[in-house]
Each structure stands twice: as C-alpha cells, then as structure tokens.
Length: 288
Image (cartoon, rainbow, N blue to C red; front, side):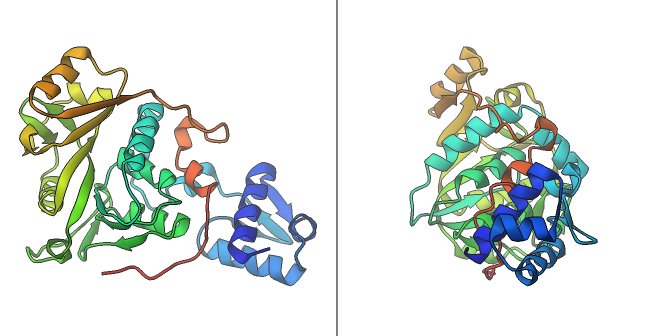
C-alpha cells in the first residue's frame, strides 16, 4: 500500500475504533510492525493521533479538528455549518484547473478546502489554516504572504505595503465577510480590512461567500462597495428582498441548498471532516 494511503487508512481505522494496537494495524494494513510503528510516530509528530504503549489512540475531537485555530474561529465553524458547506461546494465548483485564485481567511472559505482536493490550481491565501489544510489534502500549488500570523483573525498580515500579494494576479478571489448590505461588504475588524483590500486589488472577479445570516449583520467598516462584487453565493434561506437588492445593484446571486454534514462529522467539530478525508499526508514546499 502506498505510504500516504496507508496513513490515511490508519487514521480512518482509529476514528472507528478510538484506540488500536500495533498487531491490529499490522493485520488491517497488511504491513510490518516496523512500518506501522513508523507511521504512528509520523502521525503523532503532526498531532493527528496519540501514541500509546503498544499502539495509538484517537485525539479528542476538539484537538484534532482545528488544532491551530482560535476558539472564536472554532465556534464560528459551528454556526450555520450546513449552509456554509453548500456554499463552499458551489464556490469550489467555480474553480477551473490551471487558474490562479485567491481565498481569504474565514470559516465558509475554509470549508472550500474539502472540495478542492482534486483540483489543479495555484492558490494564494492569507489564511494559515487554509494553507495547512490544502497542503495536506491536495496537490494544489499554495502561496502565502509573508508576515505575522494573527490567530484570532486567522490571517497572515505583512506590515509592508509591497508584500508578495502585489506580484500575483488571480482570475477570482473567494471571500467571506462579516456582513452584506446596500452599502457594500462589511467588516468589524480593521486588521481584516487591511488584509482583504490588498487581496481584492489583485483579482478580476470578487466572489463573496455569505450565508443568509450575513444580510442582517451590522458593522462599522466598509470593505468595498457592491460595484466591486461580481457574485454572491448564499443559501436558500436568504430573503427575496435581500437577493433582489443585490441583483438590482448588478450583483449576480447564486442560492444553494444547505448541505448536510457527513455522518461521521458532529456539527460541533466540523473540522474533523477534513482530517478524515486526507488524500496525502506530506508537506510539499510552500511558495513565498
């Protein structure tokens, strides 16, 4: 069995049984004890399982889900998760192999990673969680800007105006926002405004991922006007009035049905979906 497929299978077995012994894994994976022990060690180093005496144990769900995310980000993942998942799938379907795209930090945009596994894209993202997830689940080329990681906002932000983003052009940018109104896209955090405006300037089309709750969110900062927005992807719970207002301002609106989470994923720990669907567990080089 190929190395990354064997490790992926090991994680699935661990999710089913919670704890396993080396002899059990030797039988299930048709591998030698030495190989199984090396795999357990490799996965333990990456915080994907806990090594035990004679085997391995599953990590607590909260730890495995989004180990590097802030508490706020993890909580936001739970809100309207089924609506966000449907929106994320639709957004990923808009990506054509060979394109360069930009994805900003956010819970809905982060869910796109699940559906980008089989794509061949060049992806610029300021989300360290998105970069990490795509590196371990896909063969897309990943580019991240240099700078400081702001854990609470889930963004990498450079203090310099001439950072790497200015050298990249993208066909589309996929962006989650705090809110959507007739004034434009709204944000509540000045740090996010700074990061996202840099990214918007580098893309031809701005595609906004906004579940229906975003139409009632109020914030004091305007990211950009509706005239800059090409498409808004939302869910079928969005009011007709909200959709019509966007369309009257020249914005294309796509509404999608909420999508049930996979059976193995509890709503409170949505991040586990991605860990259970690892396509390859390796660390290719990140472009800077």
